[in-house]
Amino acid sequence: DGGITQSPKYLFRKEGQNVTLSCEQNLNHDAMYWYRQDPGQGLRLIYYSQIVNDFQKGDIAEGYSVSREKKESFPLTVTSAQKNPTAFYLCASSMSSGSNTGELFFGEGSRLTVL
Amino acid sequence: GENVEQHPSTLSVQEGDSAVIKCTYSDSASNYFPWYKQELGKRPQLIIDIRSNVGEKKDQRIAVTLNKTAKHFSLHITETQPEDSAVYFCAARGLTGGGNKLTFGTGTQLKVEL
Image (tube, rainbow over all chains, first blue to last red):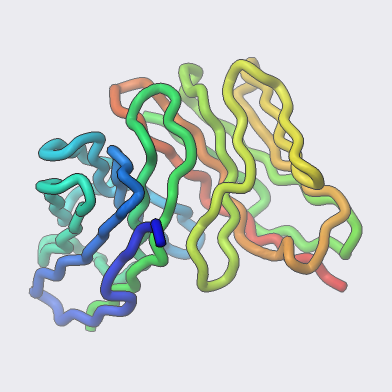
């Protein structure tokens, strides 16, 4: 069953701790993305990767880090430097990073709460 | 970079009425404009998209219009039904500054009342 899987679905963290959110896709998509969703602010891009071993900062990259060692995987680390990490995080993928890129396929999201 | 504004933030309509959501974008080089629907507790899903070489696209009860000169695009839902209740996001793909990324609007909470 093809798709994009995020884990964990819910995560609680103490202040000062780093946490890593997993994102795996078996759609053979080249491009992967991380968005943050906050009430009233839509979806804001954190990082994106158009190809393995390469990634670019989005609009709100401060306090986050990513890696893209495999085509299928694009984990996001929320570091202690992120001032307001409590949010809903969405991972997405798309077929190509070229000019004809179409639909984004989203995972079900991970809700991070900092205690 | 690209900036997308979306209005209204909330919209309430009676079942059977039409709903219109409007978005503006800033990057005149943007060439792809999708609309996503997010039902409560679920992931966003693409419902319709339009590319910059056309002015209108329709899919059953849903249509999108694009005015490149004014840099705005709109989602039109006719004969609304309760299952249309959701948050709708517009987005634009800007090319200025490199990369190939979507910038989303802030979302519209649509409520279809019986």
